Every structure is written in structure tokens, then in C-alpha cells.
Length: 209
Image (spheres, rainbow, N blue to C red):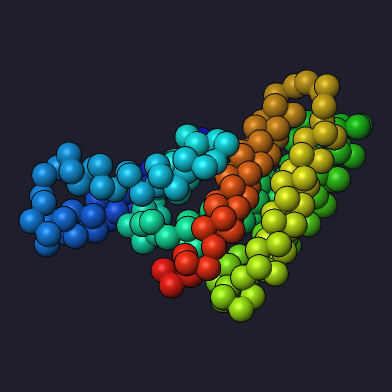
């Protein structure tokens, strides 16, 4: 269950986004509340239109609307950044399960160890991807986009491999684990889609980094 501080933190994030957007609109003479809300949501909705898990994308990337706007490179970077954060969080959760038992025995215990290894690999791949997106240039664009596709696809496969180890297994601990891992795979899938959008947009998107 999320703590009170978590809810306060999320509330502050969205309040800050509203303030940024409203300030920008007031400067332009458009202070209507409905217009403000639409301006803040249109960027993320457009960016997430290319993703498979659109609702997850909008929910996880909304805080980036005011900074990413219509820049494919910034949205790709945001997608990978969130994926990396979620993968790290999931790994901590899995390690805690292993350390304290968590009700997983026998085959599930072995699958849990494999799952942790998969996520550690995924974190490495996501780290490399984010580093590339932060330093992407026109000279390296084509080569690096191919690398990004390979690394993000591998990170996504690692999540699927983790889930495969628990196929056909029941029980609340397994269900909670599967839900946690699925969330990461959805976000990683969305990140890959945003990177592919950047690849199709091409070099013209780089001046907006």
C-alpha cells in the first residue's frame, strides 16, 4: 500500500505541471482552465499514440509533458528513464522476496532467482540505452538507433523470461510478483515504441534535444 508521503509527492508533481503549463498559457493570453488542461494532456497523448499500452504510457509519462512537448527524442528518453526506474524498483522487490522467503518455495524459489538475474541484465541494457539517448548525435544516429532497438528488445525479453518461470503457478505471492513484472514489461514495451518513433522521425528531431 502506498504511503501518505507517496500520494503527496504525486500530487505535488501534477500540481507543478499545471503551474508550468498555466504560466506558459497566461503569457500567451490563454488562461482558460479547459485550455490549460488540454494543452498539458495533448503532448503526452500524442506521444503515447504509438505505444501498445497507451493508458500505462499516459499515466507514467504525464509528468514529462511540459518538458518533452513534441520532441520525439525527449519522449524516448523519458520512456527509457521510467522503464529503468521501474526495473530497479521491481528488482529491489524481488530481492526482498528472496531474502525474506515471501511464500515462494521449490520451483517458484528457483524461478525467483532466475527472475532477479533477468532483471539485473535488463537494468544493464536500460542503462546503456539511456546513456546513448543522452549523448545521441546526427553522426551516430543510425548506428545508435540500431543498438537501442537491440538493447530494449533484450530488456523486454528478460521480463518475459522472468514471467515464463512462473507459468502455470498459483497463489497470492506469485500473482503479486507477476503483476509487478508485467507492469515493467508494459512500460519497457512503450519505451521501445517511443524509441522506434524517434528512429522513424529521423535526424530532424535532434535539434529539439
